[in-house]
Image 1 (tube, rainbow, N blue to C red):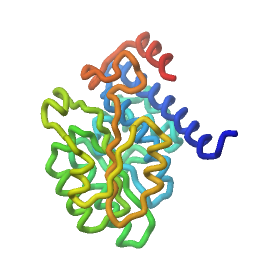
Image 2 (cartoon, one colour):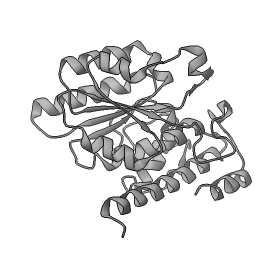
Image 3 (cartoon, helix red, strand yellow):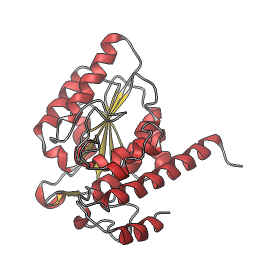
Length: 263
């Protein structure tokens, strides 16, 4: 017999597949999109949005170039009513290459890497000062961790005991100009966050059951840093794990083929 938890996980997995298809549709426009990072972060986005359904909580996409993934996840989760794919990148519509607050479900404009996490930490601190139960979840990229502002924020968050702040690291191993391991390696990443005063967890970033369980289980005065190991381009076998998936422009025929392969 399927349990309620299993049913919920299955439903979230279907929404993640729906969202991945929308991202592929956005790549099949004249402008294309940041496909690889949007797909690697998709399960993180779905889990985070599912776990922050109260009005006092926020999800902040610090790696703002994965905006296509955020728009798709917001639509799949029922937060964004209209389908963003046909309007992505078009003049007069809010679905730009980096997210802004004109989009329902987006509170902060992000894009300059490293800035989304401070927004989330500030939100978490404000909720605690107001005495609400809200929390903030910031989704950051592993390449983004090269920004000093990230670690300054982590230090402040630990000092302020922001137990209502979650840092979800989309560790797909790639960045704009190569592999993170070749440019600025990040060994012992969970231990680094622990040294700054965070509770830590390391999970398969495509295991929605593990992600939702980890987010729900946290009950501590310390910020939680979750190192989510992911695959760039996850869901589209033609580009999975490939650096070339970072930014993609494809035609409609290829998009249809790719979408059929998302299972």
